Amino acid sequence: MTGRILRIELRRSAALSIGLLSLVIGAVLLLTATQSFVGRWMQLAIFSRSMLMVSLPFALAGGAWLGQRDARYRVNELFASTLRPRWQRVVPTASALAVAVATAYVLVFLIAAGWVVPTAGYFPASAIVVAAVGVPALVAAGWLGMAAGRAVPRVVTAPILAVVGFFLVGLVPDFVTMAHIDASLTRVGREPSALLLVPTFNGLDDFQTIATRVSLLQTLWLMSLAATGLLLLGAVRRRAIAFAVLPAVLGGAVAVALLPVGGTRGAAVVDPVAIELVCDDDGPQVCVARAHATLLPDVVGPARQALGMMAAKLPNAPVRAVQSRQIAYWGRLGVSAAPTRHADDTIVFDAPAIDPAGRADLSDGQFLPSLLEAAWLQDCGDQPEPDEPLARMVATAWLSGQPPTPQRWWEPADIERAQSAYQALVGLPQAEQRDRMAAAREAAMDCRSDGLLAILPAEKP
Image: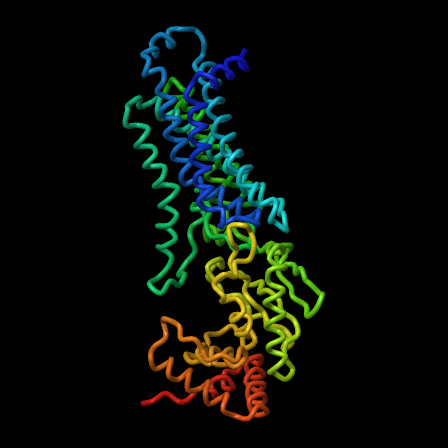
């Protein structure tokens, strides 16, 4: 009997419409942001979680609209006069809403997977766990919305809940995060563990994943919140209402006590498989991280071209190119990672941007120059000298045989110094150029900036 009622609710109630609208909204958001996750399963999971800042408020509002149904058709007193317990009447409707919003969420994920499957070279199982947390989040939002709609059957209830929901899941995390960052964008503290009660995630590096413990604790909290919503929906007496709040209170207390501090950065851990190297040995070795394995065919050509240009000019030139496996600075918890020096025979490069097709985006022509600049870079763990980037630009121009290209942020004095340094350098005999630049690279690999800085003319007083 309950199954038949559920099917009727799915066909005739607003639950199906809410689910379809959720699917359309999710698909539209998906089609506008494929570049943010194409080729990377974990980024797809994080994108699904970030979409909750839109879908959760919508589920709240949709639940409120559905919860007002009895009051809207003025049958509250009629149903209250029957002997049938209230929970028997609300469970099929609540189940229909849960099925609708959960199915819409899963379908959006599967649609997005169509962009990932052909281009991904690595599938972390934890991506499914991270994405799955969105299901109890949407169910909890829908049931809480139904309870609110039943308690306050007014036209404004649904839109107010949508605004409040967006504020809680879309704005509060940013406000809390910004409160722990000073004017120089330096982290001055870690966000409280309670911030992870909000299920949305943003800003995960390609080499990171969310700790499974965090996902399980969030699921526990969201399931307890869903239980509270369902109990509130079926509660009639004050004692039942008070009892209904207990699951959320207990679940929240357990989760807050066990969740890490630091928000998303505190919940993120390095995925050791994602940073494994995948190499092409048909020539000078070129390697990328497994998370970016599909970029390898695109970067092999420019990387070997850069190695060839270095070999033509530099004594003891590097013979292999390896992608950097350092976590981006914005993905760290505010503590600088220990420097990891690489061998002198290796250049370490940052992966190029990924285009909407999941391939390396080399259209701006900056990847080859960045590879040449990597010849002068070493992870020293400290801030470079003010003139060091300018000196590297001159050294890179010497490798390419082209004068340094002024950047739009350069000061006129820097442009003049760079061009003067380049002309002075290429005016030397070839043997002296090679010896001088070989010494500059040796100093750079030893974390000394004096060799590079020596090729710049002194600043005019």
